[in-house]
Length: 266
View (tube, rainbow, N blue to C red):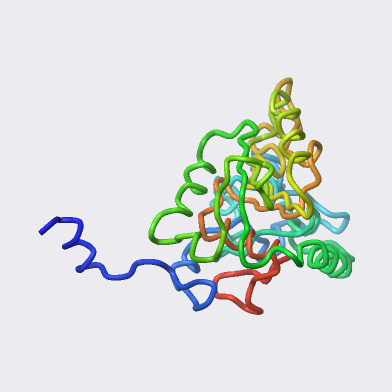
């Protein structure tokens, strides 16, 4: 008997049932940094962050822009009473300011309007959704996580979501990379070639903010938001497959009210 057959009989069904059923594995993923306490007097936590994700407010309080966090852990090691890694897969946000923690004033009010507008625009995208992926200057890590969506564990096809090679057949555009200037025109042409309604998801910290390259270099634009209108911002360096699934279902309005391992869809 084939060893593959024996392995299948031994392991049984390995495909996750999420989001229909909770998946404890999703809760084990390490997400972007959150603020857990006030900074100690005399120390500047912002100085330890290589991407400028940490800022100080007028009252000396600290905030973290998760869209800039590359999960290096320097702030958590240096200030364990101030910062910690979040748990779970719900880091995606429908707005760029929604990635700042603690939330900025007015974030929830603005989020409700954005969510309603996106739901109205994508109401037709339900049973069969097709994805087009474009690399705009990635280091390759996000591509590995996107490819994992096709393996037996995540099996994105079970959700009626498929990859396509043609933008004319695509409903969702997944963009990775820091926004290489050489990819700006191909990105626009891909977006323009997609039928309406269409969704753009910035996958990974590089696509959200430029990551370690920052707001821009001679070769990159500091993320893809200046090139395309982004509907969902997904931080992570790289984000795991569960987080990409979460971002997709958030954009499509197909998330349960309180799925396991999520932050509620900011």
